Image (cartoon, rainbow, N blue to C red; front, side, top):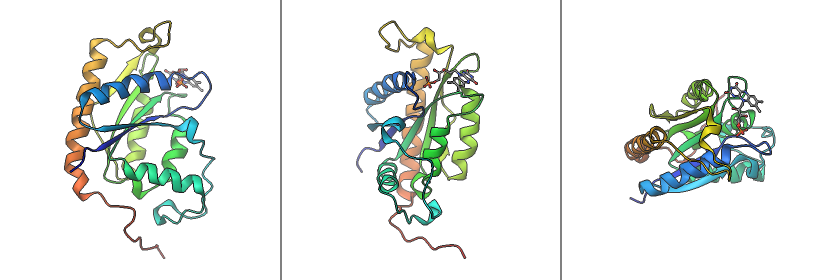
Length: 199
Ligand SMILES: Cc1cc2nc3c(=O)[nH]c(=O)nc-3n(C[C@H](O)[C@H](O)[C@H](O)COP(=O)(O)O)c2cc1C
């Protein structure tokens, strides 16, 4: 079997955001891990409008090109890391919108979280995300990377300078994502399988 594809998803879109910095660091850590083919997904580049599909996502009857494109991207990925800060004790609207667009594409796939913020290190956003991803039958892993007072880990050039705890946490999360991906990949449902509409 080929190596699983891990998507590192930048969960914020605002100009000047720091999400891409932590995503770049984690992506390079994931490449060094050697357990995955790694893709970086930037919601700012994807530019999904607010959900504008008339049909329920679970029916997979998309009418918009941007949805079909997003569906193909998520379908080909076997595991995810959502890179998220806290916005008012929650996660970003852009990330919720991107999640809500699709349904079966997410199912049976492990997901980990890299969060950053102030004293709570983005963990309140992660708790909310866990609730949402389980509705989509994703498999959240317990291991996580939670970065408090994040600016201390970004140098003047904008590069992330991790401490040992961050590096160990990233590697532990990658190990767990690889373990769970190996377990669930054989049973993951392909979206190309027919879906029976409700009612
Ligand atoms: C709308 C908004 C709400 C925020 N709320 C929180 C918060 O509840 N907790 C926190 O630790 N940081 C909060 N922050 C600070 C963010 O942690 C910090 O700005 C971070 O850089 C946001 O991620 P981003 O740069 O990728 O957008 C907030 C920032 C914004 C823009």
